[in-house]
Length: 286
Image 1 (cartoon, rainbow, N blue to C red):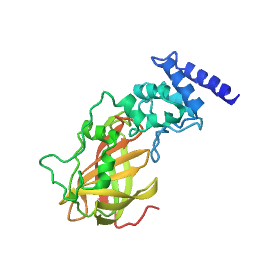
Image 2: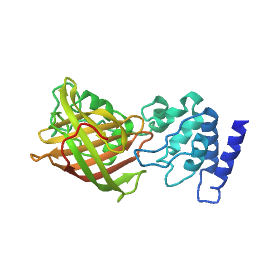
Image 3: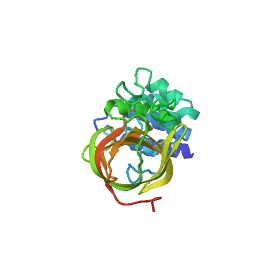
Image 4: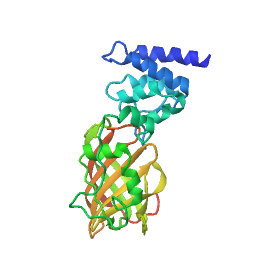
């Protein structure tokens, strides 16, 4: 009975979009019925204080997001993902929002050639057996979503296994300069990020980090050479943030560039150039 009730709600929600200029209402009906029947868990497209919110019912959220022509890629309903959801077995539907999964590759990567993220001829060559300067960073950039965002955003990764020390609390300010299927250019960026405990390990260097307003504390691989660095902040199954810059003698960071890559689909990213103001030492975010 519950499935029948939900199906009626889904039909009504999708019916509201028929009068709009939306060509995929019929396909969305099939997609969202499958999501509901399989008990799938679509991405909420939330990150920190950002996102669309959720009704708590996956099928109803699907009905609202799938028919939205401006935001459906951001919420996980690109054309190939809708084909994936319809074509997948129930146990595989969630992997239609996992860019590293086999079924995502089957439906969304078959006609897409992605370049590996690795040093060019003018970049420092790591000596620790990694491609980037860290074996952990190698795993991060191997995700198709990251590969596509680095390539399409023309993002400058600072390779090498001899990064500078990055530590302390920074006030990060700026705005999004370029974006693909995410928040629009001009959207403000205001946050505080804390780094501490950087150490050099056999497979590459790591630094502990946290961001105010975003739950969790983790270690991030950090690569680079001389004063230049790139650090990879990971929020599993949600997003990866690549921060690149140069550490100056007064602890300020210049040439700061951030690439936010959402991990539930390809071509969902934000690129920004920000100013980093040192706020003193830190060992966590309260």
